Amino acid sequence: MEAYASKPIIFLLITIIGFIQFLFILRFLFEVTRVSYNNPVSQLVIKATDPALRLFRIIPLYVGNFDLIIIILITALTTLKLYINPSFSGFEYSISALFIAGFGFAIKEILDILWYAVIIGVIGSWFIAYSNHPLFSLVDEICDPLYKPIRNILPNMSGIDLSPIVLLVVLNLLQMIILPPIFNLTRYV
View (cartoon, rainbow, N blue to C red):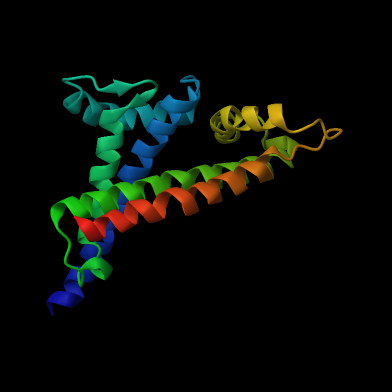
């Protein structure tokens, strides 16, 4: 009887934690890419995440453009999601290994969100009617700083922009290069 009642509760908890984590990842991406705060979607994310950030910003922790408080919160939420997830219940992890795995999965989810933002931006660019929608302008603001160095390297292709394709390849390469060493650290902790 316990498993019958606990599965929906666990599902709801993971969904709620995942949504909160998604909001904090968006807030992190907004700060790193310096998204305009006049966009209604960015205002929603900022209003939703500000109360939690005010609690933890007693001591400001910044390294360049990176707000370490947001990174710590994203890692903690990802770790909580891993801890609650029943598919990880058969593994014996120490707390430090769980946080390292949470950090690795947080990086993976940030890269996944960037990957989907590129796809949404490419599909949105095909439709003129949606180009003024706040969501598409927000996606463009997130992706444009990532496209800029690629566009500086690639030669002009007569109106064909290959920078989204190159960025997708780079994001996949980053996942292949960065994540395995992080996850291998969990074996030694």
